[in-house]
Image 1 (cartoon, rainbow over the protein chains, first blue to last red):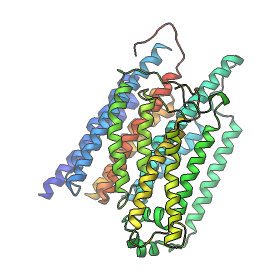
Image 2: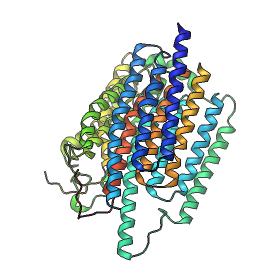
Image 3: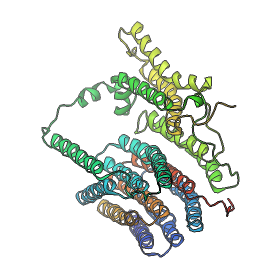
Image 4: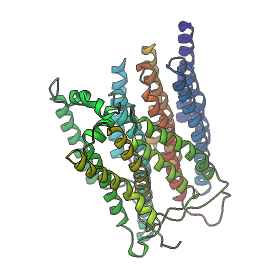
Length: 97
Length: 321
Length: 95
């Protein structure tokens, strides 16, 4: 059983790390502020989400596992709001250039 | 494996530190500093100082970052205003080259001195950890950091709380004469349907739960009143930034009462110790945990108010209701 | 498993630090915020991986605090950046 859980952790964490890579590459290579914003939100949602999913079988106790999921949800909420604000900043600085 | 992680962290931190000194724009340098604080949190975790990591995440990431951002914004606005008045191109760097060279040399000298001090320490340095571990059962708390802060070295924590109050009075003393007793900061643009207001309505309740949890869990696990108060102060500042609540007038009596209530309770418990046990801040046998909890409960609201007002700044508006 | 988790933490850290190049290039304010935002998320992921690798559950509290406050610094930055844009009285954008 624990071998299956370990395999699950391996796959999920690797996938999460891949999405962090995708987010970084997008931030560095995309041509425009808004497209870069789109890239880093992939790291926020999928990258952290898959890492959290992979770590849930590894922690001891249900409460800690729940805390992990709460961290992910909290980050999605705050990062989503900040993304809106960044997009507004990008639009306003384009308008007033 | 940890060695390579530590190497990556060390290289990143050094690189960021160098860049922060040579950065072109003050705001970009502040962003580099916030990133530096985030990486430092990881370093503390690697060094097994989870309490310090919590404090670094809260203060370095959140509060100090916001403080420096406010300062850098004023610097930028001041530069633009001077440039407009004198019709000269403002230099891109926030300060002249000799000043930054001096900053770099001083920082490097302090770092080298600290490194030498750490490296020449004997293998088994002088430490009181054994006495703390032997006597911690008397205090009733499980977290040795809390025991040291509030029982064995309670005097330091009391003085720290009072120093924070003095810092706040120092910040208030910067207000122009006409605005003394007024509200800190400028009137915030209020946009009740905007995304900032939405965030300021949803995050603070969650923040209050997290802050209270971190405060409560500090008795036996890493945490405590200071980190909890920082989180609560950040949520209050978020609400003020969104314009959902205005900054309070600093002449408000409840505000001033709240600020001094925490240290006063601490001092009162200290004097009670003189009568019951014979010395200041002594706890009678069996009452240690109750007194520690009382001190923490009293200090947390005061700390929240102090930290929030420190960031809000000096009064810039009159004392109209 | 612990080796793998440490390696994953190092990888995530190295990658989001590459994103800091966006700040170094100095394109615009928005790019700086995004790089720090990415670093914050990567830092949280690295913290969680480290916590699982060393079986230290208190690290999860640090990640929780970080998740809450990373947004706070970014919001402060964006607010002051918007306020310090050159004023254009002609066009009042919808807020």
